[in-house]
Image 1 (spheres, chains in turn brown, orange):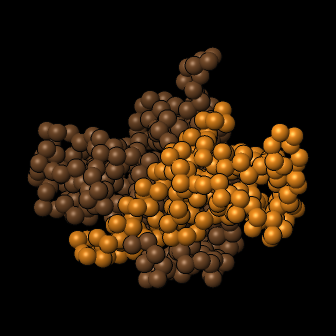
Image 2: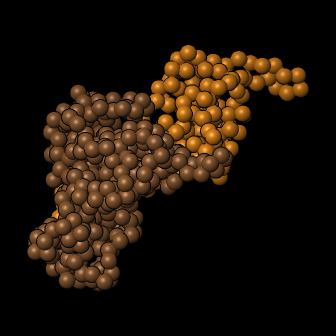
Image 3: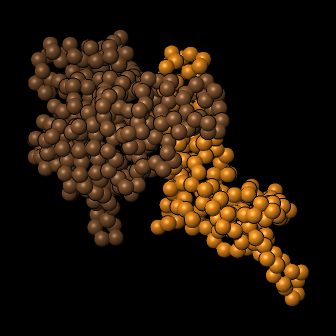
Amino acid sequence: MEPILRASRLRKHYGTGTGLVRAVDEVDLDVASGEAVGIIGPSGCGKSTLLHLLGALDRPDGGWLWLGGERIDRLSETAAARLRRRSIGFVFQAFHLVDELTARENVELPALLAGASPRAARRRATALLERVGLADRAGHLPAMLSGGQRQRVAVARALVNDPALLLADEPTGNLDTAATSEVLRLFDDLRAEGRTLVIVTHDSRIAAAADRLITMRDGAFVDETILRRPSGNPSFGYAIRHGSTDDDSGLGSGLGDDFGLPDAPGLGHGDGSGSGRDSGFGSGHGFGLGAISGLV
Amino acid sequence: MQDVVLALLAKEPAHGYQLRARLQEALGPLGDGLNAGQVYVTLRRLEKAGLVSARVVGQTDRPDRKVYELTPAGQERVAGWLADVDRASRPAPTDFYLKLVAAAWSGLADPVDIVDAQRRELLRRLADVQRAALAQPPGSGPALLLEGAVLRLQADLRWLDSCAAHWADREK
């Protein structure tokens, strides 16, 4: 299946000589429609720069980038802005809501900018605020909302033009544990609905909501962990393109054919090779109370 | 302990005294309780199990002492131990740390690769527990209980990041 997002040898460097920073260094990435991908790694590893490139917020120095089959690595400013409005939703760490506008008006704004009628924008904003559980806060200004609520408004705003791709940069970075749970629940729902997501984060909780996790170090992908089959793609086959990415533990991270896992929660993942392992809660196991009790 | 001692012998043969010094250096204050006897008892057990062999080296001004080295069986066991991902519900930090130390010292495995493998394991576990937590109604008792497991796994994962950074810096 053709990926919805494809990056090939994507590159972004800053500085020169000894000050050269290879923020993104020849990165290859395929994201299937309906897949939720998390990119994790230490700060400064280049993950935010990569997200900016993927979202056409910044231009790569080299490489190729396609969204829905369309080349997007050499767009003009105007074309990039149009693409972002039409096809890409963004969620940022600092929410970036307009303080003077109510929650509903914030959500409406990108729809209006994309040419929707005020009535259609209103209808979509109302539906999305309900979707993120904030129907009763529609008339509130951001200052009257908690951090978790603000981020949920930002997610509703990111979805208002029904983008092909939702990008999130540290969406829980400014949130406490309880608010993180709210946002986590929302992202998990979006994943289950088959939204295509790319989440850049150092928060392992939000990362664990992804289908697939990529570890980035010094501008390059160095590791990959498959957490579950993407909900949007029952027939999706994994093609891992990086040499060091497969898991040699035999626990079902990786190649398509050992991936017969059902998506239902409570069934764990893996290929069954883990059965009979120690008392812990190895990924190859089924998922039961015994498994959890080792951890609590 | 047995595995750590074996791995420390992988690079070169050593006296018990040298092994103890190396362990104490790695453990800092946590190694204060480590007495010489423990290392020698471990070495004797390993010798009995055929994993190390000892030869006596004569010294002129001091009593003779034993130099230990790995047997082929011992080498195999070290390789297996370094490749094995800890699947205990909560890996003991000291054991894991000593594995990284031993991997780096022996040169038999890249500590960063060991960290990556352990991270994959913990991330899968985190995803499992979190899925279970999300299936509970928010604010329920079971959700709270599972949140504890989530937060502990998160702490372990954060420490793994520190481990990766530590050894990645050394490799540069």
